[in-house]
Length: 162
Image (cartoon, one colour):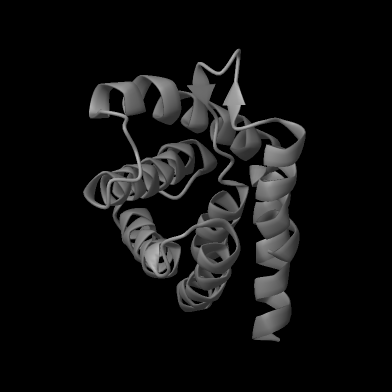
């Protein structure tokens, strides 16, 4: 999880936030994808604790709003874990559930930024210039690493249960 936490900022450093001549904003949510997979395949309560801890660290290091990620990451983990219990638990359905979690996080953070006047973007611009590219990037990440993360969390679960 520490590697995923730092991978967000490393990706942003290597591939700037404003891509394609400054038209689109692409936000990596690799840690969030890993956190949601942890909640699904390992333990929801542990994922909520990690969300709280790493959300606090994310707020300290990357944002000016203390508490945004610290509160909303655990909330998204909780919501996604409840959705998984209701819907089927296969990697295809989980793709949509994880993307929904990222969608919720992005939408909540956008609305928070609108409320505190940290963005000039309207909802239409947000959906087309930030949300779409962000979901596409994180979908690609999910498709590449869902199986390895799933097996790692399941192996960790077996070790934890023994």
